[in-house]
Length: 106
Image 1 (spheres, rainbow, N blue to C red):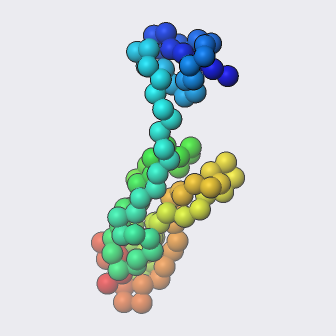
Image 2: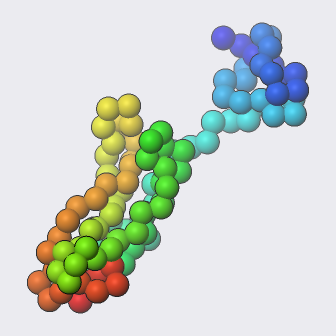
């Protein structure tokens, strides 16, 4: 259906305003985004995954050592269910052959 904005309210009209109204202006829906500072699964680099505008999956996820060997590696991967078609934050466990320190394999 078609909307225009009056204040912060959507009112039927010929102008489309599908997501949000703010001060009489239509705000576009923000794009879902997943970024990984170490570009995927890289056990030797401490990375951080940042997800934005993904339902139930938005936030910051840092790679970390669970103990002296076990690494929790975050990366962006395909979503499932209602996030199908989006890149979302995923996690995999990895046993570092030479030990784990400061969120990366030594």
